[in-house]
Image: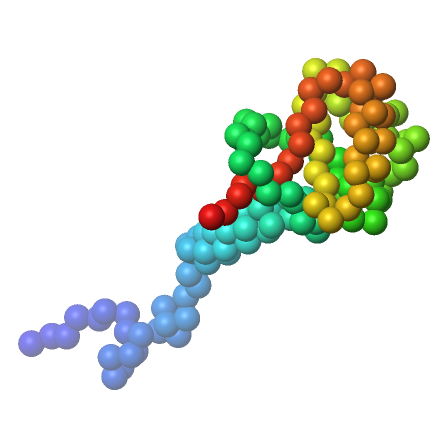
Length: 147
């Protein structure tokens, strides 16, 4: 009986090249895992960081307005400081910056948020400045009453 030559070394071991070949396939599972985790982190942080100024909103039973995708927010804290989006502004700077920021012109809805423990004076000045600038679509932001 004759033995066939299979190209292997004696003893049945494979050649060195076959044992250490490279895997050229791309494994996308770790990439998908990382992307899902990043997506969750950004979704959660976006809802938490929607408005950066901490205030205590007054509680009311008023019906809520429909939420716009990118609203203009004016915030008045309890010390009377005025913020347009997250930037502190003076009453004199408010109207020109609102006009520059309003994408839909004077029809743009403006949300005014204020601390319930603050004075009413800054509210009145902000509302008068918004009205004098020509905006009439103004919403006051409150929290719902919990029973």
